[in-house]
Image (cartoon, rainbow, N blue to C red):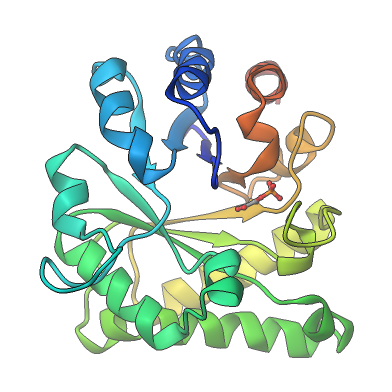
Length: 257
Ligand code: PEP
């Protein structure tokens, strides 16, 4: 199965013409071995989807768990579905830390996404303080984030729908963290642990990705681990040259494996 490269544009770019440039770089690789998903800001989503003519898939960076109503500033799953979005990033550490999102809220979002046929990309990962406490502690922390964020799916026994988990150590993220990637070794171990948790709880269709400072010099080291199903890539993927370089390296490097 081909690996998945999810591009989180965060709050970039600032103009639609730059967004179109990024779309163009991605469309060059539509016949690639790597499955590419673009997650632009809400304001660019609909027009990019129309421009892409179904040649590439899109995700949103967040959503609210209610369908409609008095929720100023929010975007519902129904709105995303109606413009052709397929994926939605939920529980990103920047949302947890800057906007105070907690597991209980994220669990409602994951449930609402799945119930409306959007594929959630649920982010989990420890911060630096927890990481420093040692392996047993940070593993336990990530598993508890997972258990609570998937709580409503577990309670309602929804195990047959596609879900994606992104293991993203908070400190490894560029911009909001230290910008130093984790080791492929730790990412691989954490991903095996997460897969084991999902499997034991009854989940049947899942992919588990790594995210945190991936770029053209390290992306192949991560993607070539068999346990790692792909990556969630932020800053480096918003630079069209770096984006193209990463996809080229992956196409070439993974073919030779
Ligand atoms: C992210 O925001 O999900 C991410 C992985 O960012 P970066 O690649 O910039 O570290």
